[in-house]
Image (cartoon, rainbow, N blue to C red):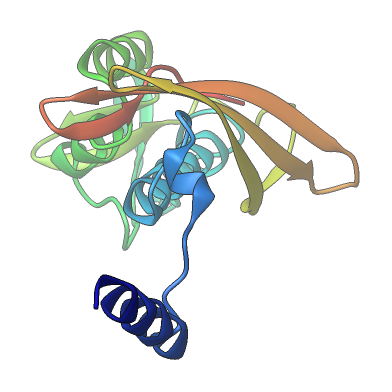
Amino acid sequence: MKKIIAAAICIALLLTGCSFKPDALDANYVGEGQMTVLRYLIKSNGFLVEDVFVESHLPTESGKDITNENGTFSPVVSDQIGTYADLVTAVESTYTKETAEKILSQSDRYAEIDGKLYFNTKYAESDAEDYDWDKTDIKVISVADGTYELEVSVKKVHGLNQKFTVKAVTVDGDIRLEDMFY
């Protein structure tokens, strides 16, 4: 009788398409939900590098510059980041608290003036590498105690791939990058 029940269960599993996934037993296995979060963080890092802090800057409105003791500033006109609070949120939702504070405190590219976000015009476009952050390949190197070590391969706009070793950590249930990568 036990053999019949076991055979029936095996047949039922075969008919329903259920399969054994050996990757789930791998110590470095990262579930699809976690991989989705990690992909989002890498893409967000790319946006902050390419369009906000390093390669370029948020779009501005010319002709409405403000000059004060800190320099000349142009008002930001962006659908994605419209206020300084939005900028802080974007950085803090991508990086650990320490890294977010470091990025924001070391950058005087943006300022809040009269409740609006402004870009400091002394920062020209950068000569930094230009990557296509939409086309990344993420390989999990290790996972231990809420720390993810990843190898991220990013294609440069003009050809060759660049590889970064990226660390992400779980802080209060949320995964965040430990540094800005570019």
